[in-house]
Image 1: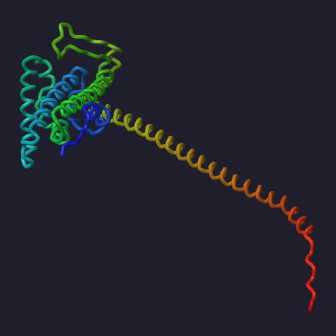
Image 2 (image 1 turned 180 degrees about the vertical axis):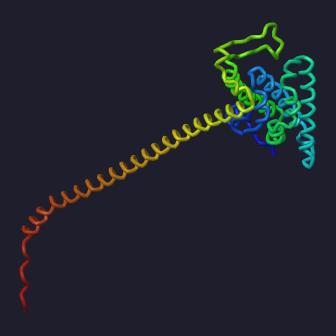
Length: 274
């Protein structure tokens, strides 16, 4: 049975709430290997988006045809087909990006993000929702790559470059601080692990702060409800005591009248004994 989900929810989930890198920790191999520069990270992200869109939509269209027993091999064949097409187009039209990414373009076939979205979403939803899921997940993956690449390139080289892989007339380079002050460790393999760990630690800290605020707000709401309930109970008790006092005062006020009536009542004459 297909799960109902809106296109907006399918699109937004992969960007933040279910970000493949920062939340699910999938695709860490290209995340660490292709984030030495923002341009290379952007190129990898765009290729993954194209493969995601193609495989998600096609798998969604064939979800009722592919037998359950061989669905994973079929998914891999579909993904490999799109990766091969994207690889050939990249080699033909963006050779510098192809040379930079190298074997990691072919490794998109075994990227857990692609197969994971095919199994978890595309095989259970229609092609339109699968398209938006692919775009959202691809944007989330690209955003994560670019954030890590920006930190690594900025600290590791002191500059930001663009146009060395994509065919621009003139490559752009912004030297933000002298290269002699750059820490080259960040553009090496160890730098990738270090930056990824720091970003994940920051996200976890922000999440914990948010959870603490929610817990504090919930605790304050519960305390407010308790205080309100206690005030209602106290007011009810005070009203009952006030009513009791009024009844006692009324009884005390009526007691002399009853005594006066009793005194004014004439005594009955004694009956004669025969």
